[in-house]
Amino acid sequence: MRAVSFDALPPREMAEKAEQVGVAKAGMSVADTFALSVLAGAFIAMGAIFATTVTAGGSTLPYGVSRLLGGLAFSLGLILVVVAGAELFTGNNLIVMAWASRKVSTARLLRNWAIVYAGNFAGAIATAGILFVGKQYTFGKGAVGEQALATATAKTGLGFVQAIALAAFCNALVCLAVWLAYGARSTADKILAIIPPITAFVASGFEHSVANMFFIPIGLFVKSDSAFASQHAAAGMEHLTWGHFFVSNLLPVTIGNVVGGALMVGAIYWFVYLRSKEASDVDTSGNQRLRPRRPGRIPSSVRG
Image (cartoon, rainbow, N blue to C red; front, side, top):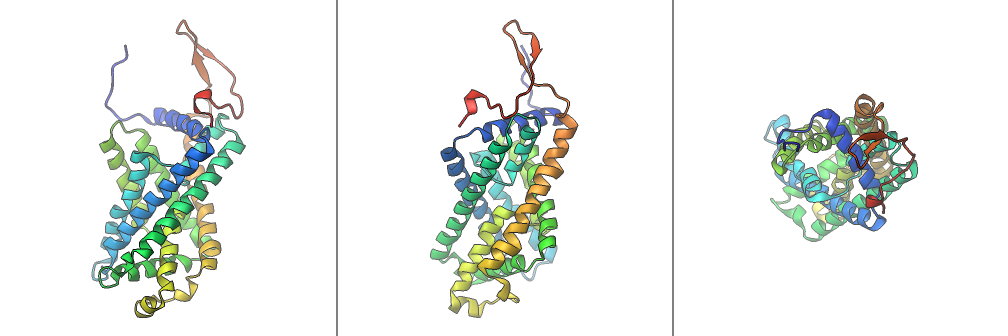
C-alpha cells in the first residue's frame, strides 16, 4: 500500500494532473460550465472591487506600495475560483495541455473557452451593475468611484500591441498560480501558492481580460452618473467608452491572455513533461499496458 504524502506534487505529476483536469473541464455539460463560469466572473469582480476599495484615496502612498496592496486584495478573486470551484477563461487556457496530448478535441477546447468567456463576462458585468445600483462607488466621499474611473480610463487608453504584451505576462502569472495550486495538498497550500503570482501581476500593471470585464464597465457605469463624474473626472476620460472597452482593450487583452496562458505556460510544460508520455491503463492483473491515444477521446465519467 502506497504511503500518503503531504509533500507538494512534483512538476511532472502537476503536469499529469493539469492534463486530467483539462479533460474533465472540456467534458462538462454546457449548463454546468456556464453556471460555474458566471460564478468565476463574479468572484474575479469581487477581488477587483476589493482592490479598488483598498487603493481608493491612497495617492499619498508610494506607487509601488499602493499597487502591492491592490494586488494582495485582488488575490481574493482567484482564491475563490480555485478553492470554491469555478470556471475561469484565463485559467482554462491550460486545457491546451490535454489538447496537445490529443485527449481533448479542438472543438471541445474551443467550446469550453467560448462558454466560459461568455459566462465570465455575464458574471463580471452583472456584479458591476449590482454594485453601481448599490452606490458603492460613493463610499469614502467618492474615493472608490474616483479610483474606478481612473482605473477604467487608464485601461481604455492603452495601445493595441501594448495591451497584448501586458496581457501575455498577466496570464502567464495567472496560469502559474493555477499550476502551483495543482501541486498543493491542502486549502492553505492553494491559497499560499496563489497569492504571490496574482499580487505580482496586479502590482506590475498587467492586463487580465476577465478582471477588465469588471474594471471597465464599473467605470463606465460611474461615468454615466454625470453629477458624480463631473466632480471626480479622471484625465483622458474621453477614451472611456464602450467602443474602446471592446476594441481597444478586451480584444487585445484576450489575445494576449491566450498567448501567455496557453503558449508561455501550458505549451511549455506540455513539451517538457508530457510530449513523450504514452497513454496507458492497467489491466486486471495489475500490469501496465499501452494503448494508442485517440483524438478527442473523453472518459465517459466526465462527458457533458
